[in-house]
Image 1 (tube, rainbow, N blue to C red):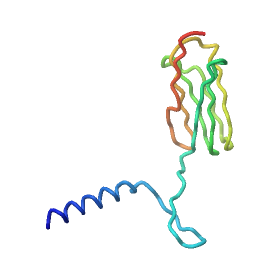
Image 2: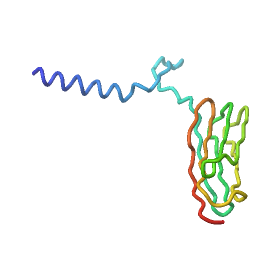
Image 3: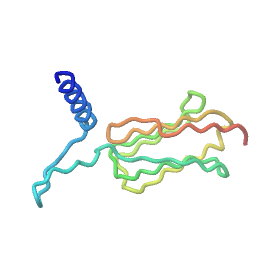
Image 4: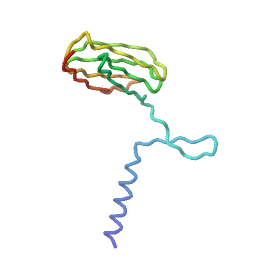
Length: 123
């Protein structure tokens, strides 16, 4: 019986840890607890092989943004903005830099992440 209790306790603990990072807020309508939206802005990217252009899309509004593009480890582009609106698209043509490995980093609202790595073999 003691082993079953320990197994159930461990299972319950594991389930609670799955939700440990979720935050909740009270709804003013019915006082129900609901998950709070992430404060990290959603950023997506795409690469257009025809124009050799990287497009960064800010799905959410963000403050203090910085886009940095590195080719083979050396910075080739950098753009800073105090704020961007939701839906903002930044386009960065790479055709002037030649073949190489491009890493695109975006820092927005204090969150830094690698958005995309693009390998361009030829022009």
